Image (cartoon, rainbow, N blue to C red; front, side, top):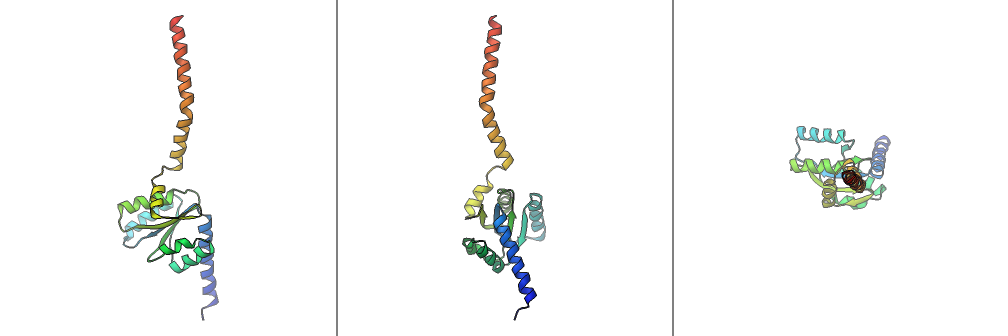
Length: 167
């Protein structure tokens, strides 16, 4: 019979992963098999700098956590070695970093993800990764909002210059 302390520790681990699944904006699941130590260290560094938590977890623990978080659609990708990246704040960062790293290192393979509580496919992760950052999107929005005001100001200036030349 299993030790009660071991069972309790495993249940606490499942509860922690469940909380991360529920609380993260984006969770990306990847197969890291074939990465060497230097590559894995570089990947972890990039993720840490972006505020993304990266863990290697057992599939049985993950399956229990996905069942508790009601994300059982993710279970079909939980085969083989599994690494998981959680981001509570930036929905694009884990997808972008892992996708870019996978392009440079063929050993890393994206398996699936949870975005805003919905399980998404690898193609959808890649599409999300291609989006500009939040700051980039905000700057695009700002430039679109400024354009009419800028054009109006230029038109008023042109009219004023024309009247000065006529006077």
